[in-house]
Length: 126
Image (cartoon, rainbow, N blue to C red):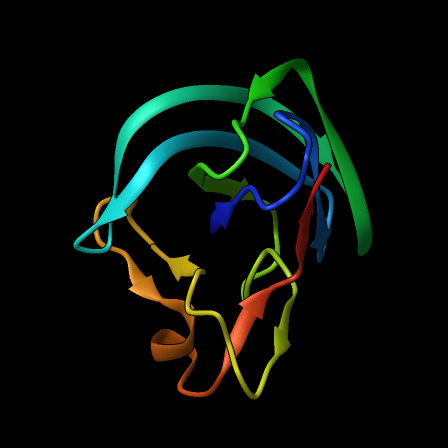
């Protein structure tokens, strides 16, 4: 998920995502997406946990620098027992095209293209 900081805050304290089951989450922060590939790893937070089916607030151990006006890419590796997708998406008639899907962590496809209709991930930055 690509995010641009349009707020007055310059730190990120966590994420909120809609999980479909008890999950283990590894979060990786990159500087940008270039050619549908995340580039320049800035930070990571491994072994976060959430669930069950609902919104889950995952707080980072230390705040992450997110300067006003900057763009960051959040890559989530989510492991759970849901075979039709570990995270909830929402249909959106006008998606921002800021969400990608990867089954192997190497090749990324816009979520809308992968789903076949307009979708974005249900998530919020904290």
